[in-house]
Length: 552
Image 1: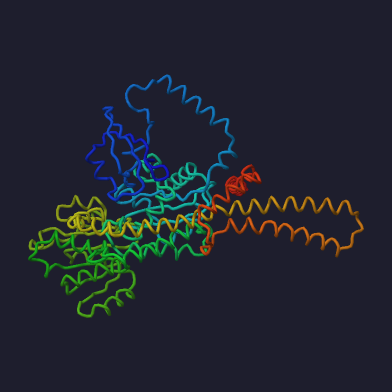
Image 2: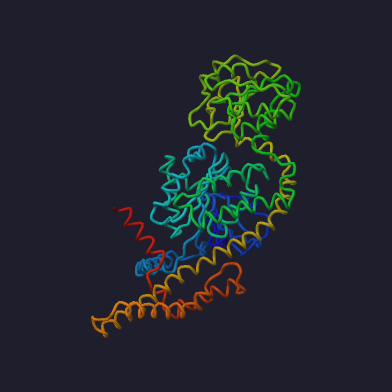
């Protein structure tokens, strides 16, 4: 991937114009580092103070050897690669795991990197999120996991015991559940690690990474991830903490900035798109049908009512939700019909909005061809606005001369209208996100001392236990139980007293005067003094346990 710990060193771009790259570069200054772009023409250009936007898919951007300029010696490079490979083989697995720490990783696809044809295959219904978390955490190098699956994105957040192995396992799992080949997923996925992964989720929660800037529904979806994950093994301390902090960020950005002022949701953008495609003279007479009365369907109905629509036919599995909406919109005639009547209702509608969780098509090409034509006053074409993922309307319906189909990817036409205003609002929110990222990273980094605390206590316990046994063997077998207990308690008390000071200097509960850097310095000092780094690493222990469990 293009980023390593949030930075870019040397980037190779094939058939990727400088102008297109600049369009994808994030416009807000963050941690910066000079990088070079190596074109196929061997021209090298340098850009300063820029950070590559994370949404550039891997098929367009990948890390290359800094020696990619013309003039490098292939023989020398081959020899150097051979030596590197040999040294890598000489390094034991235990040593590599000791040097590596667990990472927060996001493997994702969104509306910028993948078309809806790919995203809908990867979509995971909310009811299946717990099962997905369980399957992900069963992988050898995945410790924690969460799934964020919406109409515009499919993102897997994990705590990986090894970055490379974790990404490989998650990608293969995504390929398995979707039947999309790994090679194709790699063309569309994006990868983010640690601080960049945190920053990305905070942007998502704040509505900065949405198709419609500042939309509120994404914050509700992030909240649902936490609600669904509660009590699920694998939705543990780091991932749970990350998503809970993301909710705080989303609320704060919307409270302290104007990001949500005048913003629109996917549902309202769908209504705007429909009105853009209808003749203006037909606004009052167009017959509206909404299929699905869930969250998005309800918003569609409300926005249609706000635009002056006085009669809306709603098709849903049950009438309960429709009745609730009817009570909220007393001035609008809302007609309910069951899902079995969807084709009959479509025959009498000019504009059809679909927003259901159905995994099968509701409208095929053959079914749409059989529908009666619409009035020439409407434009002679029946409009299908499909904001479902997976889609409810077959893509081949567009081949029907009397129909036009639009999906969530077509909403870009609506949101591009106020791009300048959107960018200005996003800049206001970035300062808040940067501040919150620092706070979360400080909390996450403080957890790094936990393995040292465990190893130090285990180290002391081994010594205590060994010396206790030696003492008892010297005293003979006829020692009274009360004396054994007194000696045991004495040994425990000495160890606890000796460890109290070091342990206090390793803990960070938010009330300590010591800075995080001082705590981490103490951790490294204790690791050196007691040779704790030579112990089998916590990561390796976890991986061994996982592999043994999977082999049973």
